[in-house]
Length: 270
Image (cartoon, rainbow, N blue to C red):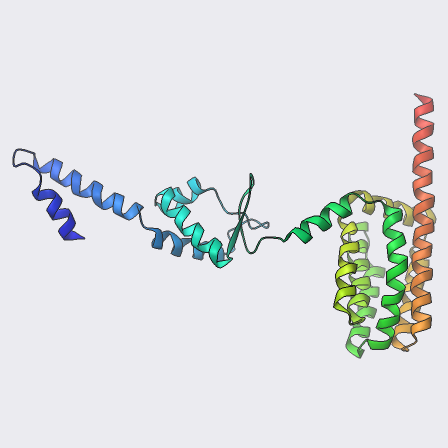
């Protein structure tokens, strides 16, 4: 490296001042340090291993990374290509670069399906699937899994806000699905369960709970369901889950009807 700088200096004419020589060598050294893809790669690996990224895993822009690490954007691009080839990062057109592996088309398709459905369609599917999951759980659930179900049911009872109730209720139903011991069923359940992230769903669920005072009934149904699973009684477990979901479906229908009627009254008044 030093020989390269000296060779460049010897090519300069003797009439050029020493200050110009120093500036030339400094500029060459700076350019060389900026064109250091291995250094950029090392720094990027460190960034990925740290907790400095946002929760969505999005990396800063190439320009920001170049300024951060004091290297050229070309070095950043080359390093990012290596990380992408390793599966450490992925790019979304028009959005940016993200840590981890890219979501497959199936995951994106699932989000589209959930976004395009409605509450009644979701309940129809749940009524066809979750009673069967409860039956399988009654046949296969281990002792520690049943203990976990009881703990989750208690968490639901102790929750004092809608967000917490929805969170723990989802966890209980997923534990039952997981205890069924069928990975394909569990995958289908997870697709359906994504609706819990929908704000409109959360709002109408809480309205249905409050308007009809169904919390105590729901708690009792959870207890009956878990007792049937603990007793390894598939028929009772399946029926307990079916009754629980039928109650929820009825409350949702009633609440959506009330909301529609309320909007009609408001429209007439205006």
